[in-house]
Length: 280
Image (cartoon, rainbow, N blue to C red):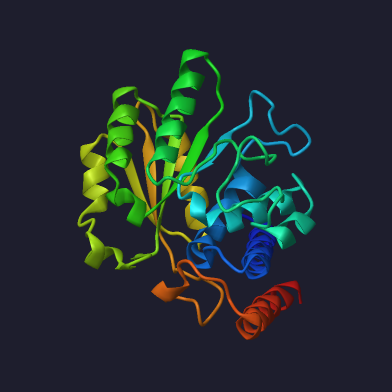
């Protein structure tokens, strides 16, 4: 990856984080922690990898993205707005009555959203259906889905994994945003995923583990997934919950609450300083 391209992705990811905080603060509710940890992956997919067109959100040959951990939609909305699907002004009324952007993605009301999601485990199943549909209709679009690590405690995730392997869905790539924290505490304490890599491998997946904040690592993993044949791929991305905002990083309390006015200012100042440094 060229240095100039890497820098542009880093700046865009910082903007995604800025708009994530903007949205959650104005909503007075939401899920900033897991949105911030997922921002780099979403940035890479929408601004480098996926074949999508904001001017034609439903074009048949587009790549699909399913945010299976739908509560982290503030980052998805930020990415979609910055990509040009709708105005960033919509983010300022996130979760407001009558607003387009609600607390979970709505494919019927939001341009660029390929699947309504929120009930954990169901999004990955929908992604499997999209990938199988592409196979049956001889289409070459790819399907990407993002799960949370806590979400992998859901049995439906493993039913979907079994399905994906059985039908050799090599056009399907899953990302696990592995930040180690969920609403009730650490993932290890709540249920414990143990050898997640081994579990996915035993279900027939190509398994890749990366630093989920390293764009070069994300690119290498996506390219490997695209070259893998006859089986689906999972990219386990080690991330930091609350990435980019110092007082939110690795703090389970920021899973599902909005910053107050003072915290909002600190977060925005930090992110704006990061962006200014990159633009210097």
